[in-house]
Length: 98
Image (tube, rainbow, N blue to C red; front, top):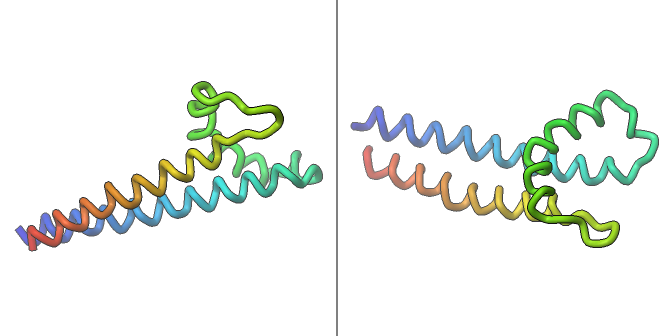
Protein backbone atom coordinates (compact mmCIF):
# COMPACT_ATOMS: atom_id res chain seq x y z
CA UNK A 1 0.00 0.00 0.00
CA UNK A 2 2.97 2.33 0.38
CA UNK A 3 3.17 2.60 -3.43
CA UNK A 4 -0.38 3.95 -3.59
CA UNK A 5 0.41 6.31 -0.71
CA UNK A 6 3.47 7.63 -2.50
CA UNK A 7 1.46 7.98 -5.71
CA UNK A 8 -1.22 10.05 -3.98
CA UNK A 9 1.40 12.25 -2.34
CA UNK A 10 3.06 12.79 -5.72
CA UNK A 11 -0.28 13.74 -7.28
CA UNK A 12 -0.86 16.15 -4.40
CA UNK A 13 2.56 17.77 -4.97
CA UNK A 14 1.99 18.20 -8.69
CA UNK A 15 -1.54 19.51 -8.16
CA UNK A 16 -0.31 22.00 -5.58
CA UNK A 17 2.35 23.26 -7.99
CA UNK A 18 -0.15 23.60 -10.84
CA UNK A 19 -2.65 25.47 -8.68
CA UNK A 20 0.02 27.84 -7.36
CA UNK A 21 1.30 28.46 -10.89
CA UNK A 22 -2.25 29.21 -12.04
CA UNK A 23 -2.65 31.78 -9.26
CA UNK A 24 0.54 33.40 -10.56
CA UNK A 25 -0.93 33.41 -14.10
CA UNK A 26 -4.12 35.08 -12.86
CA UNK A 27 -2.19 37.75 -10.97
CA UNK A 28 0.12 38.35 -13.93
CA UNK A 29 -2.87 38.68 -16.27
CA UNK A 30 -4.47 41.23 -13.95
CA UNK A 31 -1.26 43.27 -13.70
CA UNK A 32 -0.61 43.16 -17.45
CA UNK A 33 -4.15 44.36 -18.15
CA UNK A 34 -3.14 47.74 -16.71
CA UNK A 35 -0.28 48.15 -19.21
CA UNK A 36 -1.74 49.20 -22.58
CA UNK A 37 1.51 48.58 -24.48
CA UNK A 38 1.30 44.88 -23.59
CA UNK A 39 -2.14 44.31 -25.16
CA UNK A 40 -0.74 43.06 -28.47
CA UNK A 41 2.28 41.23 -27.09
CA UNK A 42 2.41 37.48 -27.78
CA UNK A 43 3.36 36.93 -24.13
CA UNK A 44 0.26 38.82 -22.98
CA UNK A 45 -1.94 36.84 -25.37
CA UNK A 46 -0.65 33.52 -24.00
CA UNK A 47 -1.17 34.66 -20.40
CA UNK A 48 -4.67 35.94 -21.23
CA UNK A 49 -5.68 32.74 -22.97
CA UNK A 50 -4.50 30.69 -19.98
CA UNK A 51 -6.31 32.95 -17.52
CA UNK A 52 -9.50 33.03 -19.58
CA UNK A 53 -9.87 29.26 -19.27
CA UNK A 54 -11.14 29.85 -15.74
CA UNK A 55 -12.26 33.46 -15.93
CA UNK A 56 -14.71 33.18 -18.84
CA UNK A 57 -17.05 30.68 -17.11
CA UNK A 58 -16.91 32.81 -13.95
CA UNK A 59 -17.68 35.96 -15.95
CA UNK A 60 -20.90 34.34 -17.16
CA UNK A 61 -21.95 33.91 -13.52
CA UNK A 62 -20.55 37.11 -12.04
CA UNK A 63 -20.91 40.31 -14.03
CA UNK A 64 -18.48 43.21 -13.57
CA UNK A 65 -19.60 45.91 -11.18
CA UNK A 66 -19.07 49.15 -13.05
CA UNK A 67 -15.58 48.94 -14.52
CA UNK A 68 -14.30 46.51 -11.88
CA UNK A 69 -14.05 42.81 -12.70
CA UNK A 70 -13.96 40.69 -9.55
CA UNK A 71 -13.62 37.33 -11.30
CA UNK A 72 -9.81 37.08 -10.90
CA UNK A 73 -10.18 37.53 -7.13
CA UNK A 74 -12.94 34.95 -6.94
CA UNK A 75 -10.93 32.52 -9.08
CA UNK A 76 -7.92 32.94 -6.79
CA UNK A 77 -10.11 32.26 -3.75
CA UNK A 78 -11.48 29.11 -5.38
CA UNK A 79 -7.96 27.93 -6.21
CA UNK A 80 -6.79 28.62 -2.65
CA UNK A 81 -9.74 26.57 -1.36
CA UNK A 82 -8.92 23.71 -3.73
CA UNK A 83 -5.27 23.87 -2.73
CA UNK A 84 -6.15 23.76 0.96
CA UNK A 85 -8.88 21.14 0.76
CA UNK A 86 -8.09 18.81 -2.13
CA UNK A 87 -4.31 18.79 -1.91
CA UNK A 88 -4.29 18.40 1.87
CA UNK A 89 -6.82 15.56 1.61
CA UNK A 90 -4.61 13.75 -0.90
CA UNK A 91 -1.59 14.26 1.36
CA UNK A 92 -3.46 12.88 4.36
CA UNK A 93 -4.75 9.83 2.49
CA UNK A 94 -1.27 9.21 1.08
CA UNK A 95 0.25 9.47 4.56
CA UNK A 96 -2.25 7.01 6.02
CA UNK A 97 -1.56 4.48 3.28
CA UNK A 98 2.17 4.45 4.02
